[in-house]
Length: 243
Ligand code: BV8
Image 1: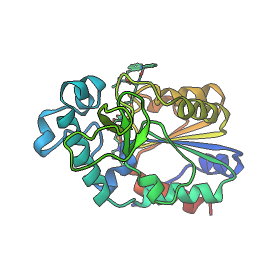
Image 2: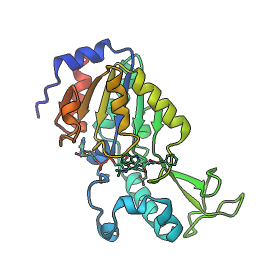
Image 3: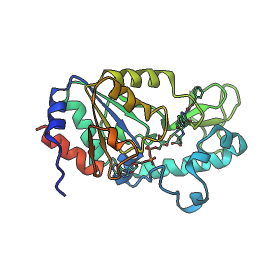
Image 4: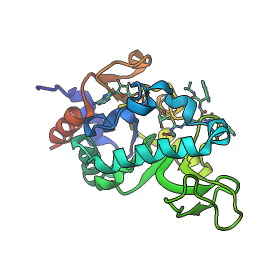
């Protein structure tokens, strides 16, 4: 599939002092990980992801939520990074400075070799105390693992709807979006905040902003470039174009 990367975008990337990349579920789609928008299948078909990924749902039925996250852990453990993940790791090597902010909790960027990843919505493989937020290694034989320090339930180390973004992740991401020369929004519907607000920060600071998504998002018109394609095809092409 021939993908044209606009010359101006390549030039902007070549001249860039700092590039900020925001990724969403779409960057893992070609690894077989369903996006959030896609209806869940099998057991979970009757649930909307947004309804399960909440502290309220966990309080109501922690065992159910643990079964969901363990199903997703197995799914992403079996998945492999795709050429889109590897291309981003390569950009980190060839460009002077790249800040990678991901909304994905699937650990695939790290497995593809990306170094400095801001996990804006946490990591699905972490276990944290529901009361204190402290990191622990839960006992997977239990329906609901327990905090060894205070006896509260452990919960997956992800950010649920209605919960604040971890302070350091939020501060570093906002700084990067406000400082970058080029901002790439890859595989995200740009509907979930405050992550989607990072693009506005970059725009306000006159960064060149580009979207990579096979389906133009609601914000596509406000981007300098909207590359309509799969990230697993467009990003390797972009790396090639940088020579
Ligand atoms: C908070 C972890 C307050 C859990 C996730 C302002 C306006 C409106 C609403 C709000 C607002 N501010 C806050 C809200 C509420 C809410 C929100 O944004 N709701 C939305 C639904 C309207 N935000 C929150 O609740 C946030 N917290 O505001 O707290 C607060 C503040 C201080 C103190 C206390 C409280 C927290 C949000 C984080 C929730 N957690 N994930 C888990 O994973 O289980 S969000 C989760 O959904 C993902 O992490 C991701 O962020 C989001 C899904 O979005 P995408 O990644 O974009 O994926 P999606 O499926 O939508 O789209 C995929 C895209 O890929 C599509 O466009 C598709 O075309 C494209 N694609 C497909 N294939 C490919 C592809 N692209 C490229 N290549 C391909 N091959």
